[in-house]
Image (cartoon, rainbow, N blue to C red):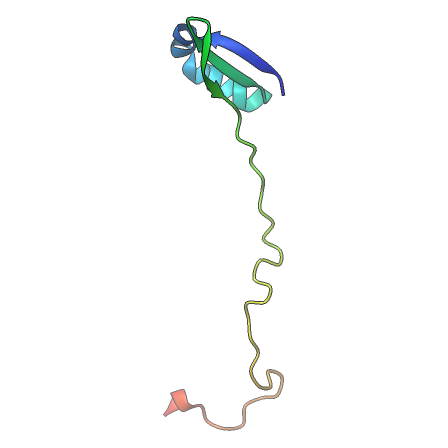
Length: 77
């Protein structure tokens, strides 16, 4: 990943624009004060979660789920 340096005063004046550029162009920005690095701005790598299979092994089947129920349910009483 490409890394650029910028003075703190210049970063302060252009902060929002620089954050957008770092996010869109995927480079890191080292912020310096008196020539010494003090902070680093890096883009966040967002990974999309795949919801397929997220409920695997969370359901328990008890009894026959195919045959119709011929008797009254306890909830009907």
